[in-house]
Image 1 (spheres, rainbow, N blue to C red):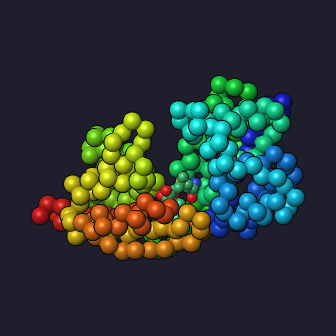
Image 2 (tube, rainbow, N blue to C red; image 1 turned 90 degrees about the vertical axis):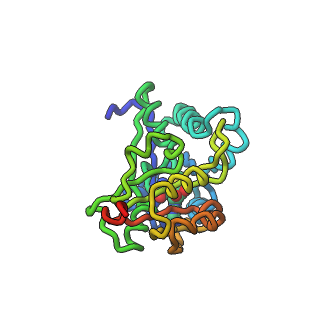
Image 3 (tube, rainbow, N blue to C red; image 1 turned 90 degrees about the horizontal axis):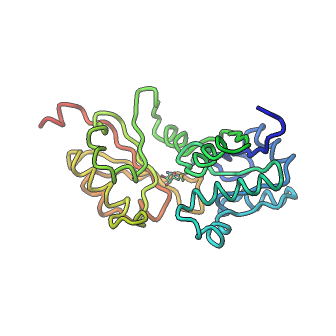
Length: 251
Ligand SMILES: C[S@@+](CC[C@H](N)C(=O)[O-])C[C@H]1O[C@@H](n2cnc3c(N)ncnc32)[C@H](O)[C@@H]1O
């Protein structure tokens, strides 16, 4: 890592939503930094940073007010952060959970940094995935597949997806992606109904938008998912679908 490069620390603050979920390394970096940007401002950490004497900037507000000019809002966040890092040499970008789990702006920052003179330093945090493994007493070492709902717009997913593997599906929105008519929720439900037996178990794990750190659980079956749209789309929700035994798939 060259010293003269501008630097963006991308810090995951874990599942607690507050300072106590930070690693000691992350806490030290925050204590010694001035320019701090948070992807969301609804978690308690935003107010706690102010009590520490910091002046965090909410990208939630910024990207609503300033970044709508960009075709892709996540690209907008990355470009905005690069601009800020150019001004201040070193900035911090804070996200819930882990910076590389379902965080498109992080991916965009990494791609942009390859083209410009920037270091992106990732500081991991506990992700919603860790919380789900814990809640379900599930060891991912036994194998699982993970998708974000937008992947189901792609018809070739049927060839890749295997119902005989434990499955996690995240980021299911009720707002259609730009230029598309169906919502992520609709394409996901259609896809699952085509693939699984109607009475196969599904576990919905969710928290309200303002309580990232509280994990609730609702156990249901595939053909009842369509009646649970509000739980799935009005919260931060993830579906966990246990594997189907091969012989059940054949009957
Ligand atoms: C943009 S991603 C952010 C994930 C974050 N970087 C992490 O590692 O936890 C948001 C998605 O994570 C999942 N998620 C976040 N919090 C959750 C929770 N408490 N329970 C279940 N799923 C959650 C949902 O699928 C939600 O749509």
